[in-house]
Length: 269
Image 1 (cartoon, rainbow, N blue to C red):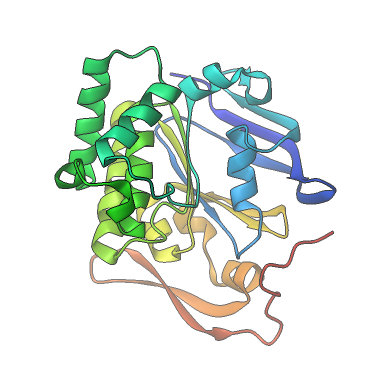
Image 2: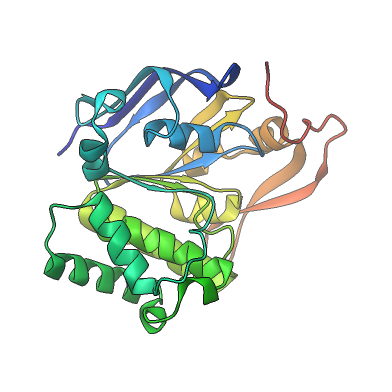
């Protein structure tokens, strides 16, 4: 089994603006789905960008014993699959053409037959097969988001970093997408980090959670044990409860905002 992902003292930001302040996180092993939680601008996207090589950082982030910061772009692409928050730009390319071009750019060593097989399997899993010959600029935002995720799944990297992969999807596709992500973690022994706002989906599909608040780690641990009424108050500024549905699944019930709700998008200097 590969070594876990280890993050210690990671500081990152944009220009002179520091977003993440020397964060330490538990060592997560392959086969685990980790939900990155926290209010808007807590630092979730910045963490994923840092790990994927989009943002420079100080501190340590190691996967399989290798420091991610020191990898070449090509080597990183073979290890890390990153889905940005924004859906792919609308272009005149066919959906399959766009997928194949992106696939070859990030996994150039795989032959055409293997690329076709993997893209076809990912399209089938995410309901994109009947859209393969459509132009990308005719797709909805949700369909383009699924296209973006399909490329990460098709590459089958051992570390997947997904920035709000369900934000533009209706409920059916949110669930189907998260089921596909869980299968990738379990069947391919991949480690998956997901920035996600829906706490109920996080509780249902994530093994572990890390809660960021003003660029620092507020809490981290098993999902069911970490999301508590106190955490809801401290991280989101709401009074809430954790109940169980008839199937025994935990559900967050938000009763209202607290009088001292944290400012939206607030980031400590």
